[in-house]
Amino acid sequence: MRAVRRFTIDRRTWLCGEGTSPSRLLRRSDGKACVLGWYLRACGVPDVLMADVACPTRLPLDAVPAWIRNGTDVSCVSHAAALLMSINDDDTLDDATREGALTQLAARRGLSVTFVDGPPVRRVTPRK
Image (cartoon, rainbow, N blue to C red; front, side, top):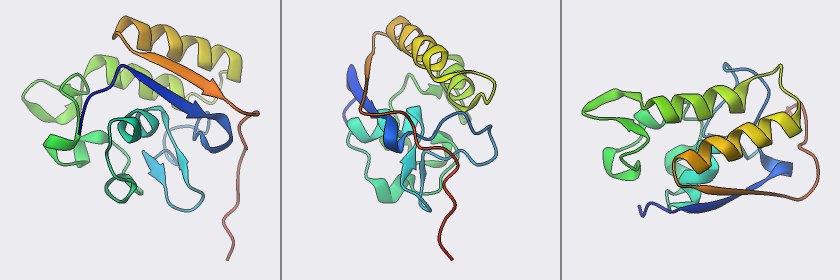
């Protein structure tokens, strides 16, 4: 894993705005990733490690940059990571507000996030 300062989120496969219960770093059923999933991908964390994992604290320590962890307490994320997760998952925000808030918060961490492609796909039902 290498910590990066720039990462890109593809709106078509961005898992956002669905509340906290369905959120995952990378949701296997539809291949969507949350904001931290996109960041960790850019850092080189393999999809197989993130698949259906709800929180970065469930990943191996060496797969998660220090700023995401809460110091030596490996059971919870940092305040900055928790805010990113909260904004990403908030189902009351419109997409423009969410993107703006995530961009500003990332910038406070020294990160640059770029959003690309069309509007996010909403509420994908997995095939049975």
